[in-house]
Image (cartoon, rainbow, N blue to C red; front, side, top):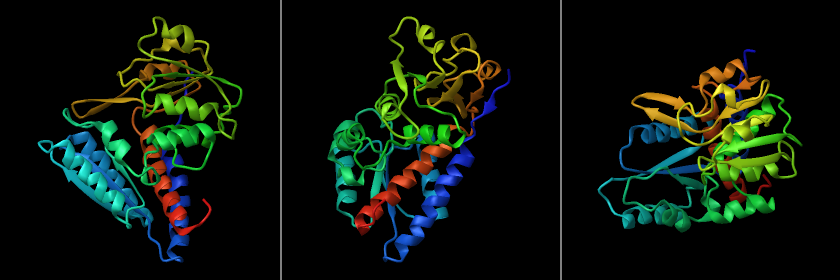
Amino acid sequence: MTAQLLAGQPVAEAVLADVAKRVEALATHGITPGLGTILVGDDGPSAGYVRKKHETCEEVGIRSFHEGVPSEATQDDLLAAVDRFNQDPDVDSYIIQYPLPDGFDFNEALLRMDPDKDADGLHPVNLGRLVLQEPGPIPCTPAGIQAMLIHYGIDIAGREVVVVGRGPTLGRPLSLLLTLKQTGANAAVTVVHTGVKDIGFYTRRAEIVIAAVGVPNFIKPDMITPGAVVLSGGITWKGKRLLADVDESVGEVASWITPRLGGIGPTTVAMLLRNTVQAAERRAGIAA
């Protein structure tokens, strides 16, 4: 069996086309959405992610703003940048690029954010909104994974999904999202992690496996039942090479698989911009 590829770019392009139309509609109300980014330090991959977000903003007509915090700065400097974005009326939503260098407290900065300006959907208020199925920003990578499954016609409702990883930015919110009673969800979700002795026991019975551990090539072919759908949400940089959680040889067993490059990444950026335009629509009093 040779798996079909779950390419992220076509999904991202569809989302961004919708975002661009909504940006045009907001312009008739005199509003241009604004996305802010806070980058602490000069980590290469993080800086690249931030740069890509700003480039994509320009493509769809969203203004972008940036706060750089040097790695030798203090936690108070980071919190001051958060306060500036909270108070800036031109910034509808913003992110604190994760992970932060040693010595900085991401959770404290996250809690300092105005939850209505939380573009990543990770503030506890917004995770609570997700649980209650109330309107609010949905965490971007989980939302991108869901959009990808919907785009390729992969039914989720009632199917057994195993999420490998329980991190606060991906595994945990994804498991919540896919259990909701709504389109593109309503699954039977099991969450396992590296503390589980036999992860393969769970992944081999799953119809859909989503890896979110950040360990290169963690998911091997013998952990997958033939015909399963396999997505890699976690990534690791080895020098300049990006490695996925799912070994590429899994494509010989799975029916669908994300590619090592061009998988979840483009959809994550697209969902960030969707959250931003939704925040601007709320500011304009337009139902999203």
